[in-house]
Amino acid sequence: MTDPIVVGVDGSGRSLRALVWAAHEAALRHRPLRIIHVLPLVRSYATTEEGRDREASAWDLGIVAEAAAIAQEAHPDLEVTSALPSGVPAAVLLAEAEHAHTIVLGAKGRGGFGSLLLGSVALQVVGHTPGPVVIVGHLTTGHGRVVVGADGSAYSRAALAYAFEQASLRGAQLQAVHAWSHPGPHAYVSAAQDTMAKEHREALEEWLAPLREEHPDVGVVAQVPDESPVIALARASDRADLLVVGSRGLGGFHGLALGSVSHHLLQFSQCPLAVIRPRA
Image (cartoon, rainbow, N blue to C red):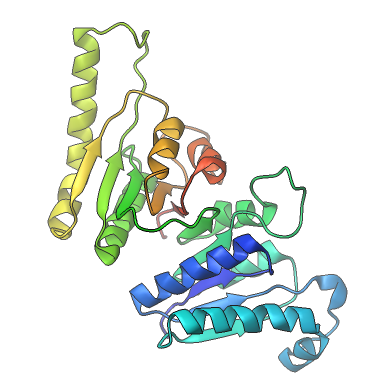
């Protein structure tokens, strides 16, 4: 069976945007779309699918029916399935991720406090899912550009491969960003600074070379800005249809599920954000 694109829906506006993105992704990849709406444990006593269907309220059933109708109307040939499992949302979605190509979520669901930019469910799923996770806060189209952050780590290499694939699928330009920070004052220009910039550009070109050969149809713009990766990538996301990063980079502690750059970009990206980790 072909691994599906799995999207979590909860009736919120952001989950609707996630659904639209996921349906388009499934159509592009010729994969089925699986819609998941998690029922709270407090309302579930059934142990079978039939029992859970009876327990689901009209509101819950309506959310799933509407989501399926929206996806089917936009992509009539798309295979769409749905489920209303009960449990802790993050745990349910992580279980779904074991048999999914990609998990897609809205940046924040119906629960939580209004001041939080990122829901706890999305944060947990991004930190522990073995495959790609796409968080949709802002739905953007028409830029024709996929942006990817690169730093040479194994996570970055996985992100680069995914970004090239996405750019090829969408007929988009790829903007590869390797941000670095000069240790001295930015106003001070020196030969050493020029040398460092050249070395970073050469490193980026080395990481890109095999993927350029694999995807000759993808036009690539390589950038090595002298600034914080978060600032550089957040700025680039304002003119992109998708931003791609590895779940962790070269820095940080190995015990952390999510690196600081990807964690910040979950809040500041101005377009859908794909967080990638190397599959085992």
